[in-house]
Length: 332
Image 1 (cartoon, helix red, strand yellow):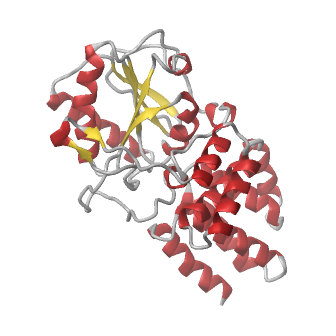
Image 2: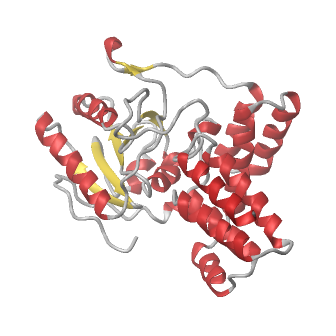
Image 3: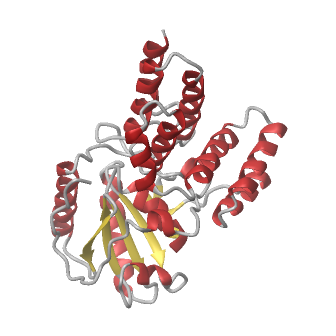
């Protein structure tokens, strides 16, 4: 991003730049093919401030390996990371304060809770010795927020300031719900998700260990068993995206594309990086421009790749619908 977000009120010190996690993490671990940040979630329409919340934007049980995806998501909306210490009552107080405030904002914020007793390395990623602590990540940059409960009015003001900082950096959108509505009548616990089909679980476990070829194979077998399996179709496209970008040097890829605007592979690579980083419109627009300007065989290569990226984001996403219209104009 071109400018740093302004400093936020905090009691914390020692947070570190997480942008390096985008390539150094050992592997992404989505909770299923629909859980890739800012991308497809079958059955869930786009959420925004004008649409009532019909789900939750609170992620429980997040692991250190998930930080890569959270950093990517922070390119679209601010991400609050609660580095929880379950034995400390302050953690429970922070959860009770933050979860409803985040959900009330309908996808303009995301809250992720990491149990630091189970994932102590997550604290090290932020340069912290112990939890509980809450850190916001905005455009890949960490912003210390809280390590103690505060009055509700102060918390609401803090979150509004965080959203204002996001808006100053061009982040004014929202993401779809990340799970079913939290059952507030039952103490705010999120409903347990249904178990994944065996091949889907196999694919997720493969993604967790960075074996994208095995994930691709599992999703292909799922589609062979059920050609109408939309989650497997999305998962296959997502696994392909992870595989293509796993070893990319972002700076080198972007430099190559800038110097070779007619090189289809160079443009596809940048589009992949943009999509993975949450810059969906940029990824789509780049390929539509290439398709409009190149009537040769490269056009179909770019078109097929763009359609695959549509699957990653989801047909219900308004950005996909808008890009499909632009693609039709470019082709005809």
